[in-house]
Image (cartoon, rainbow, N blue to C red; front, side, top):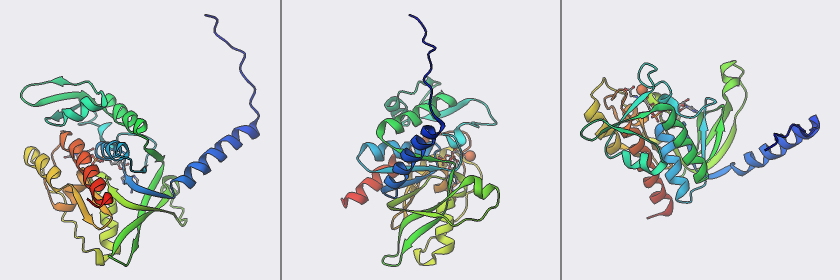
Length: 265
Ligand code: 48H
Ligand code: FE2
């Protein structure tokens, strides 16, 4: 086969026009959604896959320009993650290869898991906003309930350039921001009527924490849910260290609860 090198000439104005028209259409489309997930770590990505597959219009907002959250750093930057049963069900579902390492324990390559989760999310129809930080919620006094998020360019925040945010309206917000539970934290601080009191994460105890994180995953206030390490922060659970089964299972469970709540089942 001959490799073609007769590259098409594209006018600069057309490049800008393509980007602006498509991006504005995308942004207009996500002004109202069923679900906003904050954080593209293991729990947020997993939740997005199951929510979107069930038909929820889902947007995932990530502060950084990457997929995977803490998975990329693994344990002290080593490229292997430990996953325990039954989270291998999710690995099978997204086509991620793993190695069995004894009774109920498996290992995965961290790059492969990040990319397979992101790929499954895109296949499921999840829309992504990268380089954007959620720094506040929108709430409604009736209830009271969480009704949306305020978004800002991460770059503006890093440059300490205060600009006013844009708002996205949604039926449910999932805090998958990891250790700091940033969304629950801002909601508890600024909307005392929601009665949320994050307890703070405790020191390590891997096995008990894995179980409890999944158990406590769910609704924090009307319209606001949490998954992953945010659950430890909110409910005062021990950290678990570099084991990721509960992150995946928590994401899947959060999606199931949100789907049920939004369908009024
Ligand atoms: C937009 C935001 C914002 C914001 C944060 O930290 P993550 O990987 O979160 P989880 O809970 O899915 O997974 C936790 C896991 O990585 C981990 O740290 C474990 C298992 N630790 C155990 C231990 O003992 O330490 O991902 C969160 C993502 C990141 O990509 C952030 O950049 C992003 O959320 N994020 N995005 N707006 N306000 N806050
Ligand atoms: Fe961590």
